[in-house]
Structures are given as C-alpha cells and as structure tokens.
Image (cartoon, rainbow, N blue to C red; front, side, top):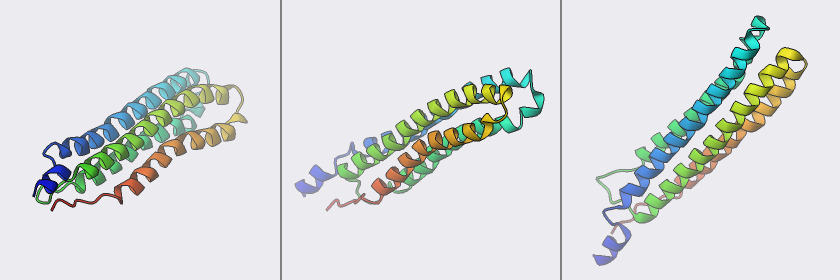
Amino acid sequence: MDAAKDYCPVYSPFFGFAGVSSAMIFTSIGAAYGTAKAGIGIAGAGTFKPHLIMKSLIPVVMAGIIAVYGLVSAVLIAGSMNPAEGYSLFSGLVHLGSGLCVGLTGLASGWTVGILGDTGVRSVAKEPKMFVILVLMLIFAEVLGLYGLIICLIMNTKVSNNCG
C-alpha cells in the first residue's frame, strides 16, 4: 500500500492542472500578441490601401488558430484526469510536459505570426506580389504551434494511472 502512495501522491493533480493552465495561458498570450501585432500592420496598411484589408486578415486568423491548439490540448489533458481513479505522479508530469510543449510552441508561433503579419501586410500594401510569400512564411510560422500540438497528443497517449 505504501508503494501506491509513493506513485500517487496527493499533489499529483497539481502538475496535471499546471499543464492544462500552461497550455491555455501560453497559447493565448501568443495568439493575443500575434493578433495585436498583425492588427497594427493592417491598420497602418489599410489607411493607404483599403481594398487590401480583407486579404490582410490572414495573419489575424492564423494567430487565433494558435489559441485553439491550446484549447484542444487543455481539454484533452483535463479529460484524462479522473478523480475516481488514482492519478499518478508520472501522469501529472507527462501532462505538465505536454501542456508546456503546446503552450511554449504556441507562444513562439504567435510571436512569429505577429511580427510576420505586421511586416508582411505592410509589404503587400507596397508590392502586391509579396502576398504569396507572406502566406508561405505565415504557414511556416503557424506550423511551429501545430508541431507542439502533435507532440502534446503523442505525450498524452503515454499516460497511465496505475495507482495500486
């Protein structure tokens, strides 16, 4: 019985919920920064070329998708935490790691999308041929967050709640 207490201490869910919160907090900060930074570029470029505003919303949409990655991972992590069963320390640390993985990659991705969106929208306003290049760069920036989500999902398959 002591071995079960060693593997399933009462503070194990703390690490799981820290993973849930870090997934949501960091991806939301990244998405907010990306949206704000790209929005500044849209406002600046839209004053000179108003017909490009709808086309320039792509970075804002892509920044918003990053928050969805955090939401999906947070729901999956929280859904696998069942208080009726035991919750092992291993599971808590895996959930913390997977939440940090998607959260920090989402933060980096949102930061990158924001900077690219701001600069790219302004460059498209000056030279419309830059639009395809902007979209390609935004895709590569967005996929950083997607990689974090994929690793988070893989890590969540390794969770086992063996508590005696």
